[in-house]
Image (tube, rainbow, N blue to C red; front, side):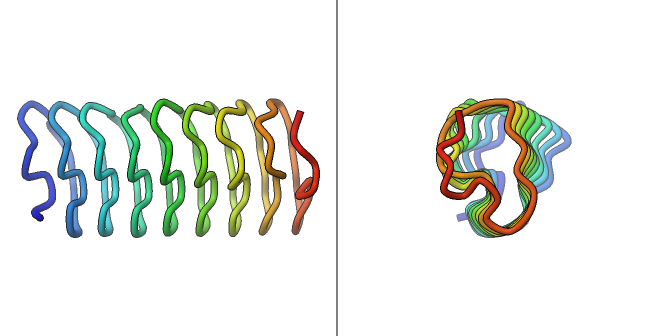
Length: 144
């Protein structure tokens, strides 16, 4: 499957990798590097995904995902930043989250305004306004 092959109205997009941004119709200013990056993005704009399956289900705006499966399940969440394998991988609708490290905030699906730094940091809940710093910080806490 060719990258960006379904693009109709979108402009200023860059895609490299099998099926990268393949569903894009009108999204603008996206960068997708890796296989299946932003695979289902149809109109999301201002996103950057680097790494296999990063932002795979994304349709929202202004997300940055660096790492394999980072923000993979994001659909409606916007203004999220994840770096590290599986960081924010379960996020579907949470906004303004920042996760850095292997599986940081990996269990968050709808929480907002969370920051987690460190491998496995951030717990598994959907709380908002939490900060976790360090290896497994708040990992057994269901964020409230």
